[in-house]
Image (tube, rainbow, N blue to C red; front, side):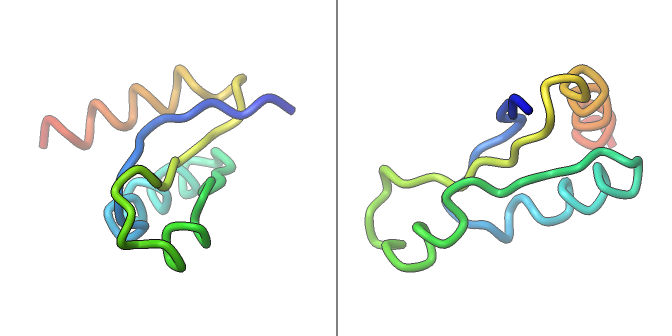
Length: 70
């Protein structure tokens, strides 16, 4: 399965609401670098990436756009 990044953030908590919303719509999600940023949070080059399967990417982007316009 190929995963695509929907959004990046320095802190995992910034992505949790979007992750919950995507999962409630049936889109599986994965937080890449989740534990790396917890251990090395002093380094700004490490970002947590919210990723979804490539097949769900378009739907995830639509949901993200909908959330950001609210």
